Image (cartoon, rainbow, N blue to C red; front, side, top):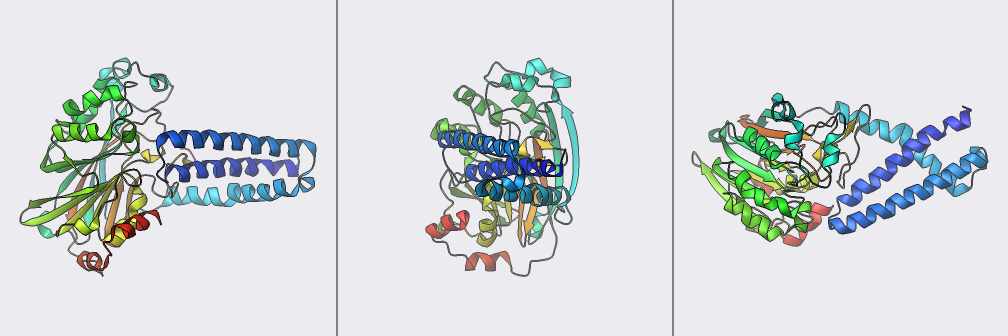
Length: 404
C-alpha cells in the first residue's frame, strides 16, 4: 500500500467515529423514538453518501488532487482517527474510579442453570440472543462499598439496590427476568431504585407487577420511567409500578427517615419526561436523584444532590477491544458510559442495565448493583446545604441547567 493510501485507514476510522458521535449526541437531545429512527435513517444515508464520495476521490487520484471539500473533511477525519478517538479510548480505559470505592462481584451464567432456550422468547429480536458469544444471559451481580462525603453518620451502611433498563419484551422469556429479579432480591436492602426503560413491548406490561412486587426496600422502593417507556402507555406503566409497591418519582419527590435522619429522593426522565421541580424540594439531610440519563450530572452537582443513580447508556452494550463502548445515546457520547463518577459532593453511579431493545451484549454483561454507602467523616469544602441554598430553584433555570 502506497503512503497516500495508508492515509485512508485513519480517514475511514475517523469518518466512522464522527458518524457514531453524531448519532450518540442526537440520541441524547430528548426527541421521541420515532423521530430518532427517522434521523438515524437520514444519518445512515449521509454516511453512505460521504463514504461513496471519498471512495470515488481515492479511486480517481492522489489525495492532494482531491476537491477541497473532500480534502478538508479528510483532514478532520484523520485528526479524529489518529488523535481524538485514541485519546478518548485511553481516557475510558484508564479513568480512575473515585477514591475509596471497593467492589465485590460474581458472574452468574443463567443459561448454564436454566438453559438458553428456556430464557429465549418468541419476540422479534430473539434471534440476536442466539448469536455466538452473546453475553445477554451472563448476569453480573456486584456490590460496591461507596464512601460518601457528607453522609450523616446515622446512615452509615445504608444499602441501595440499583436496577435499570430491563426493557421487558418477549424476545426474552419471562423466566429470564424472573431469574434477574430473584438475584436482585436475594439480600435485604434499605432502598430499591429503578432508573427507567421498563418495557419495550406492550405485551410485557403484564409482567411488571409479578416481577417488581418481589423487590422490597426497608425504607421504600422507588422508580422512574425512561425514553423507551413513552411509547407504551407511560401512565399505565406508572400505575403498574405503584401496584407493585413502588413509589412513582417521575418528576416528583418523596422523603423517608432512618435513625432520625431525613432522606429526600427526586426522580426524572428529563429530557423526555418532566423536569424535577427543585422549588418543591423538601428539607433533608441527604438527597438522592434518580435520573434515567446521566447527562444531568453537572446540573445535579450544582443543585446540591449527594447521590445520583442513572442508566440509559447500557455501558455501550458492545465494548470492543482497544476501542471501548461504541454507541452511547448521550449528549456527552462516551463520557458517562458506566460505573462511578464524582464531582465535589456528588457521586454518580451509571448502571450497565439488564437488557435492551436489541438484546446484544459483548464485553458488557447485564448488571444488578447494590451500593453500600459509607460515611467518610469529612465534610466537603462547601457543605451540600450551602450549595442547595445558593441554587436558583426556578423551573426554567432547571431545564436550562440540564441542557447546558
